[in-house]
Image: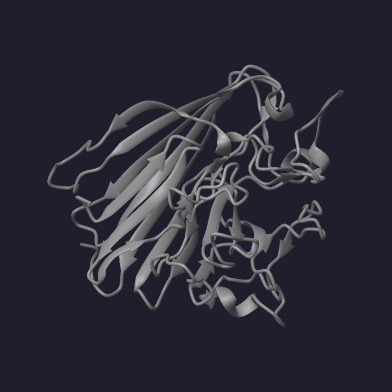
Length: 337
């Protein structure tokens, strides 16, 4: 790797396949990844993928707009549409539209790279109405005067008929350098979220917004991920909850921070999205172990198309869907090198 941070993107699913950070102690792999021989297709864990057309759950796969309704595709045996259906964007080959290995080598920048991937989703794809054209930009972020480095992704989409859209990266992070058997239970987490959307037993939002005070989801100050996770604790299978990010949606603002005292690595997440799905990997299975990584999925609310009190999820012809998420990394044992 030439720089302090190296990211590998796979055009299949617009997926983050590797994220390597050079620290004073060595190079750490910060994301879960498959070995070449172990890749599962379709991937039930969405490892590193860009999920859509609609990230999260849509109740009973049902969409209603005015007098028109449609039924979305669901995985066999599932009642709800999850992450855009069983053949969603995470399983598709995206097209490389632009690739620039290094776009700036000035005194104020260590050198950045960018990649733009595109996807066309036709009308009726997985039951969704309207054709949708999507682009996702990945770019590295690094400044010579800063101890941190990072990357960002920015999603843009347009349609030819009213449709719903909600895209998010499903990368699993482990700041101690992912290895077999590792977990994130000792990682510490802060969420810039004073409210959340309570769910029923099937993880479908109830349509209300509630305070995190007095709940297992109150991470407004640093707490171990494992404080609420495991046998005998409030959330035996860990965190899997939509959190509402403080501040104004549409503006880039802090969403979360994650750190490992063992490695000294900290990650800071900022986004223009309204919410963050925090998922600590409690449903992971072979070739991974439970809680091997944590997802911080910036998104609109799950089931927002069916919930009048939730942010608008519909995109109309002539409008542009657009959001940006940034991840920054520092190391307390020294600057990333």
